[in-house]
Length: 142
Image (cartoon, rainbow, N blue to C red; front, side, top):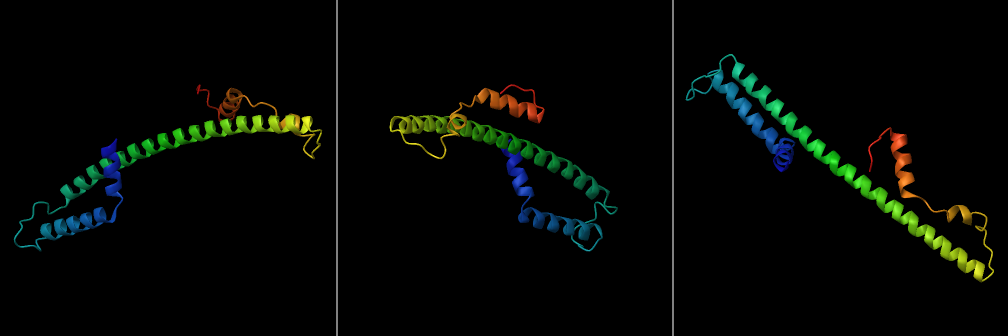
């Protein structure tokens, strides 16, 4: 996987483009007979076409491997973000409960008193995951 990533990074760089430009021009000049020191080995450019096609196949494969790896990393990050958000929701609910208990004990009313029961309602992480999976059509278990 690391090799595919390194190849993809190099293939997407300007040095790669310059290297190909130099090789392509040298190949064409040599096979047109414009470089007298080098005999033509591919006057019809069939070998050049074959080499370019095979290279394109391998490069596209390496790019796809790299994209799949990046997608896996993205999915893991999204799952971690969801877990952090659920933990934050749980902690916020506990804080609301504590503040509500303090306001009750001190007999202080707030504009949010009507919303407190709804805000203090516990969120079940498993139910959230189930809802997300149902909404996305994904039946896989977390």
